[in-house]
Image 1: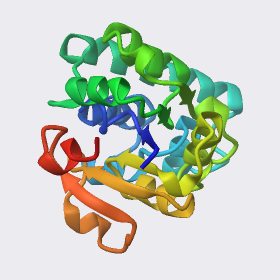
Image 2: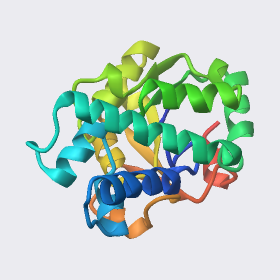
Image 3: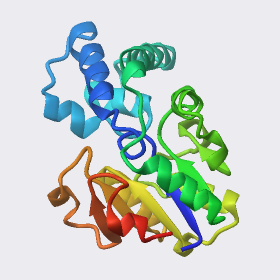
Image 4: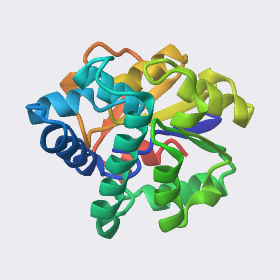
Length: 216
């Protein structure tokens, strides 16, 4: 393979419980919802406005209200996760080995730019990535392929020459729709949640996995 494209949340950093906690507080305590943990988990993908619409319907909030709720949620996430911020085990070494081998790398994430900056700059890993595509850079969220086809184009690499690292079924579906193979980190979803995806090369708990090491 000629390039690696990484999802961020749950793939590079195991932060999805903190996102879920922030969404639960916003949805249930602040907005009067009564959502279960499973309902929150199954709906918190894509752009924040899309999450709010899935949970509360399309007529509940104005765009300005959704923008404010989104920023409140992300500020809470960053505040509570900052002291725990860390890459998945083995990822620091994997990024350095790929970088030294000249393999171009990109991020294709539904995260907003400030959350991507929060991870890259606090962990000092921005230099590894030649392209960064955030929620603000795409028209359609995963499972639409744009989050992966756009960074591939920025890298100058054909989709079939990319491996995507993901952690959620919608991300694996987006990789499939982009014509890309995927490696799944099982931080967020069990293997059985990906039963209908035929583009998955491997499942791993972290980047110390021998299969992942062997990709370089």
